[in-house]
Image 1 (cartoon, one colour):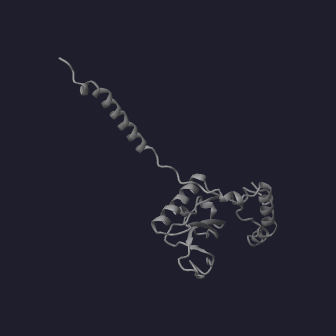
Image 2: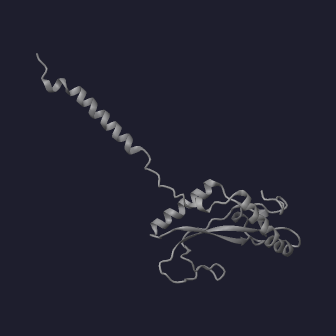
Image 3: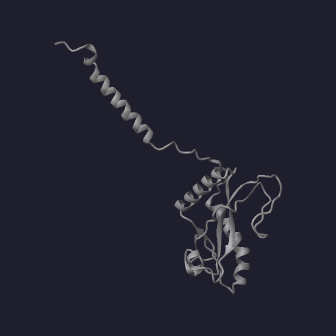
Length: 187
């Protein structure tokens, strides 16, 4: 008995269909394309030597005042977040801003100081009590074009972005309280 023409060519056609389905399934499983990263930061980069000038000026001026007020004990000089923590926090700020329809999200860096009785679980290390620290606060573009005041009287802003009180603030940084770091040496 003769096999009809359609059944002769069915196997290769079926193989092509299955192969196509598998390829399409794999394509859908791959990660979505990553959001392009702006290179606008490149205009704001400075050399290590230029950073040293800033560090030395701080040491010569502000740090002298702080050291005097601490009875000769210098305050913390640098703060450290892992790249992983920074990337995670930036992702949190971007995603939360998007959910809240906030425009032009950013991060403002504030100086602070741990009180001597600060809760130990709110610092990277308990021995940081009494030392200055930094904390990061999410910002977004003002909804109104006025000079609104935000947070407390000591944390005000009248520029185009204001603090976003509904988002969490990042702290718990590692810092270098003396005597681990000399005030004359930039790590």
